[in-house]
Length: 238
Image (cartoon, rainbow, N blue to C red; front, side, top):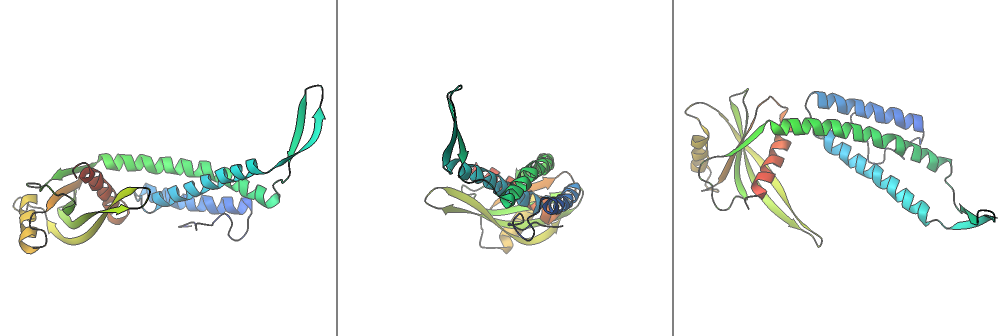
């Protein structure tokens, strides 16, 4: 199973064994992707499902705590009054709770596996500036390459600031431009100069090289991690 829907717990049959089989099949697919160093979208999907599950668990607990109680008996020897909830879980709710309690540790295990791979790959990425950097670094280019290949991909990037009443956050918008072959004469500085000569919209662009010390799947791993690495680097400069 490649994916889980957002409402996988309550869709179709709400049965613990059925949902357990469904979840383990999905997580087996995730582990296979991780084995191939393919982190996205599995890692972000895992986190989304995990947050939904923990929210369900916590909200159910809050709901249970808010249900009124009624007195059932009095223990005069222990000076205790015994209460019971006026609403108890029926079988369906108990089945959902069993699914949630089984699933959360499974997601935690695979999230830890994905994070370990993420950290290892991130440690193999090297980001450097190319040429003279302008004061404004919220737009420019970045080059993607690996030490195993002479091919280099060029992307244009732009940092956009979003605001809402509660917070501000930045997003990195990227667009693939072209490919170059790395040679002694076709170095990073030459490629930057060539881009400036051909593309007049950025006369003095901030430019970065992001190189990986291992071969990586482009769309599933290299590009997403490179964008995160660039975003963290640029955020300290602007």
